[in-house]
Length: 172
Ligand SMILES: Nc1ncnc2c1ncn2[C@@H]1O[C@H](COP(=O)(O)OP(=O)(O)OP(=O)(O)O)[C@@H](O)[C@H]1O
Ligand SMILES: NC(=O)c1ccc[n+]([C@@H]2O[C@H](COP(=O)(O)O)[C@@H](O)[C@H]2O)c1
Image 1: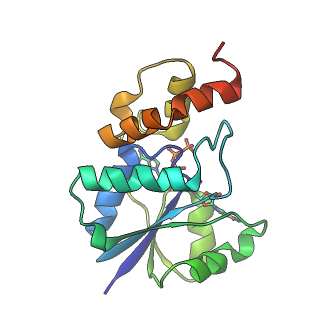
Image 2 (image 1 turned 135 degrees about the vertical axis):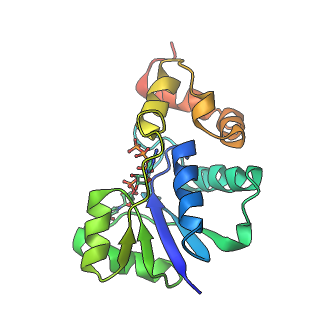
């Protein structure tokens, strides 16, 4: 049984993340989606709580009829020491043998810790990136099509868009 790990902040989870997840699931039997920076929320770069991000991911998987028995979604807070981060992660998640990531720091840390790493293709990265989505939310731009229908509805239901705008002070 082959298990993989896909870390990210997922602020918010978008269709590029979904592309990576589907691609990774073709390579392994089970995938751990690691929700990083779990301690963060209510900031410009990290507006959503770990729990909210887990809901977005889970609802998107359900919407896309992805077998949830093959996926674990696990939150993890950051630590101050990059050199031991892979071991810290190893303590929070079931064993895995392949890392899926495009973030160079993450790849480096896990390579040094002896893990096999695979770099997924970029899925329309100019369009599908969370920084752009957060910017569009703040400026009242069109971001609906960059996330799944369930993520869009979920963010609206928790008034996550209003939260983000209030944080940066552009709601007035
Ligand atoms: N469109 C995409 N195609 C392929 N990989 C992606 C895409 N978007 C993000 N990733 C990868 O998914 C992982 C988690 O990404 P992350 O949660 O940081 O999203 P992001 O869109 O890069 O967010 P932000 O803009 O807030 O930094 C990283 O390895 C990142 O490179
Ligand atoms: N020292 C640490 O705690 C450490 C090191 C590298 C990445 N991370 C986390 O892993 C996640 C990586 O995701 P991104 O690719 O979205 O940046 C982030 O939440 C990041 O903070 C944590």
